[in-house]
Image (cartoon, rainbow, N blue to C red; front, top):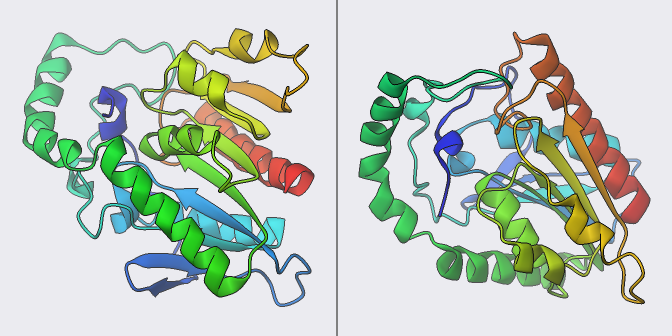
Length: 258
């Protein structure tokens, strides 16, 4: 499912530059790009494509990595959470405690979305993502795919890690992943994590002596809370630094591993 922090966040400034292809979003690599057989798939949070944020991030990745970027609408046009619920009831930075009143308000706000979350559980959305990746590989001739996921989409990226559909992944503040899922990842993985989230770096550290060990990195961004890499409060200096740092981290990781 999802997590309480997944219901909060802010809208990024700017306008997306790509285009919709059916229900999906596509932003092409620059005209002078050389990586025509590689692409990035961005996996959104529970707000889906209703927010401009993932599309703006996709545009940045296409320009700076030099690859096509796709955002599949794995919610089939009906994201579990309405963007109008963006009031930040949960902390937007590290070190802030949530009040009991805000907890109660959050519960009341989240209740109507529980059925939608059930109908978009992992066993439903994962096959949609798998089919989407297979489709663009077949139609566009991509030989390598990198995936980056945020929150809800971060968990999908983790679950893609054991498959042969992707060659590398970036995981930003994922919602609800298990140690078993992390141990199953078999592609290079970069983690962009909030300060207020305990990392599971030890899970990867313990595998370094294995012959099938894969490259990984963990970056914890000081002063940030869940959601900072895609729904940041840019008025908070440390959150702004974390957002920009995680974006640069993603660019560097795909340049290195894809």
